[in-house]
Amino acid sequence: GNPNGAYDTCVSVFRQLGEPIPSSVTPEEAGAMLAKTLSLYKEVYNEEERIHKRLEDEKIRTITKIYNTFVTACFLCKQKHIVIYHLCRAVQLSLQNGACEYTPIAFARFAGYCVMKNENAESIW
Image (cartoon, rainbow, N blue to C red; front, side, top):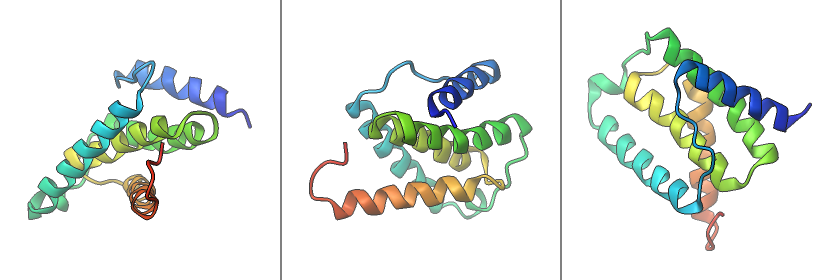
């Protein structure tokens, strides 16, 4: 396939759905997004009712689904810090709005990144 084409298509769909997609992401912005996501996880993890909340909003479910494709396209054609930024956004949507059938893949990818980052002494980007 064409990952750049997939990336561009996802950006177009996100914009139509009102999901903000920055035109560029710096490593520092990605680092801040990672810190924000980890902080949000800790906050939600301690609230029993939020951790079991089911995502009912169909628009956010669709955005979460598209993020799974988008992160794959980013991985194939963009720098790692851009992948991390958008992966964090997918996880944040689930933490803020509840889980759906597309949440596990985002969390699995996020966990894989966190493990990889902790195993490497140098910065991942």
